[in-house]
Amino acid sequence: MSTEIGSRRSVVVAVTGASGAIYATRTMAALLERGWHLELVVSDYGRRLLRDELGDAASIDKLADYLADKYGPAVRSGTFTLHSNRDLGARIASGSQNCEAMVVVPCSMKSLAGIALGLSRNLVERAADVMLKERRRLIIVPRETPMSLPQLRNMVLCAEAGAMILPAMPAFYQMPQTLDDLADFMAGKILSALGVPHELYPSWKG
Ligand SMILES: Cc1cc2nc3c(=O)[nH]c(=O)nc-3n(C[C@H](O)[C@H](O)[C@H](O)COP(=O)(O)O)c2cc1C
Image (cartoon, rainbow, N blue to C red; front, side):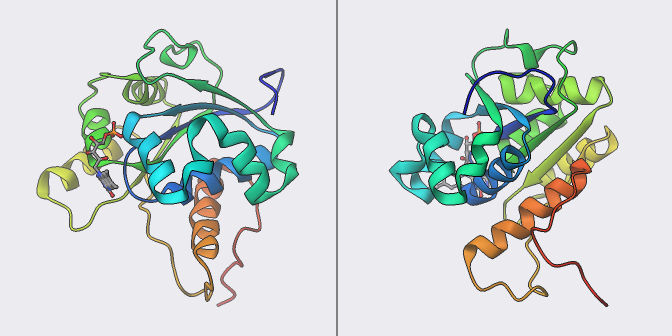
């Protein structure tokens, strides 16, 4: 995957330390296959989750090869830039950047709280804050169970500020056979929320 951006459609993808690393990799692969540019930021616990849940091959320094091996060479049609979560001077920390949307997948309750309160303590929170202030699409994929009242309230705060809350809740009507089928469903929901056509799961026929 090259680092050239050009006129590609770009989106910020943030990976934080909630369970569900496979949702992140499937979403990244689906966007890359379609030629998108990803501005990628992964929190420290997001990095740990990639390794813990998907193995050492999915660690952040090997991500491009991992995605190509697991999802096929078409992912190399897209590009990505990896930012440090500590770099509040990165281009996605500014409203002048050209990303049309941001997805936080999966989103921990800690990052959810930081976004809900506009804390901007790190690049994930700052980039999300930029999306809200610029009235651009922010898709938050929270994962926790059960949820406390503060966590539920933080989701309401984000929704009131204009974010879409898209919980990591795969459906079963499409008769999933594998974990990848479940990940396809969640990635498909995220692509739909971005307005990107896909066939990641069969549409409901009624
Ligand atoms: C293996 C593992 C699984 C975790 N799963 C979740 C989870 O599903 N949801 C959540 O909100 N936090 C979860 N956590 C806790 C967060 O990673 C922790 O609160 C962390 O500080 C989040 O920081 P971040 O949002 O900067 O990634 C998990 C932690 C570990 C180590």
